[in-house]
Length: 503
Image (cartoon, rainbow, N blue to C red):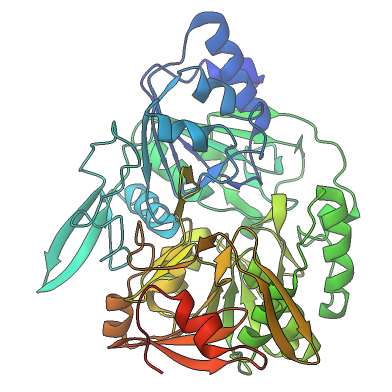
């Protein structure tokens, strides 16, 4: 039977050595007050300690002094398993300093492993991850020198086919953020951006004899409508009520509290960007890339658009009238709206449906997307892409590996060089005024996020769209298929590449 508790009382349910699974998505839906209560107790008593933290999409507030950053930095956590570390401002730096064990696995594979554990199965099979960094034959999921756990990802053979077998440690504590608890303890997510892995996390924790802690904004007397009660009260141990400030209409546009017609998406994007102090970088290079990439869209396509340069695809899809003829999706579970960016990435403006994250990755993993537009840090002579690990910096793979694994057409959107690139466009002609200091096309990528060999085997169409040209993946390497007006092919493309391409 659940109890209403303060954050401090709920933290007493967490024991030294527990595995805590957090249902958050980067910077959204974090049970902030519960994390702060954990840190307060740890500073006072040195407990709970030796924790393992698991989260499909990672958890943070883009602020090194908030959420879980303090108790991770001060030593309460021994092991961290996440799909993405981007919103964890200090933690993503500490993982490279060998401060604790840290593992990175594809977001969807962690989500499916949690769901498997909820059903009494120790892990989940997937072809996602074969031939990229997480494959034990390549690097494995460990990020630093301390991370030697080889039980998290295994290569297995099933009926003569290769799979990766993903597992996460047994979950002892489910840490969830919801909207409201009714008098029966049922938890609804009406004012949330997503429900993520919430139900699976709770089911797994209870099956393991663990505890479920849910932070909510309010208590309501009227029972939730059955379909709205994502977590039934019988699975809940502690309900922590922390009244939130009113969201305001900008944030409510992301929760489905009112209908947002597609014609108003631009208006709400601007409102949300002002609220989150996030500003898109409108560069000439990004506009050229977005315009060219958007030409690959077809009517009725189901689409995923990544953050950064790929976001400009939406701008030109709107200009061409194609935006109303496709269906956009986002990893956290949203379908049929317009993905938000910046600190509220994972939310969606005007979504038609928001379902569990594991279901979204069922769609992605099985080739349900027609096309995706993703960023890239490096591309090599084979067509492999590194999108998760830069020089001295680490963000993580997130949903990238799942999204690109079987999507019919994969479009990588990237500048030819970085750090100082300056491009002009006049009357449809492109002029590279100054090259960047860092080449994006390299002999061999430093870590593989996307396997060209696997894509060719799957029969996927793969394009690499830059501000000066477009390449296509072939069995013999990259083929130059499009040189933009104003570009000198030999000087601006061939001379800048460390490897030959097919012309």
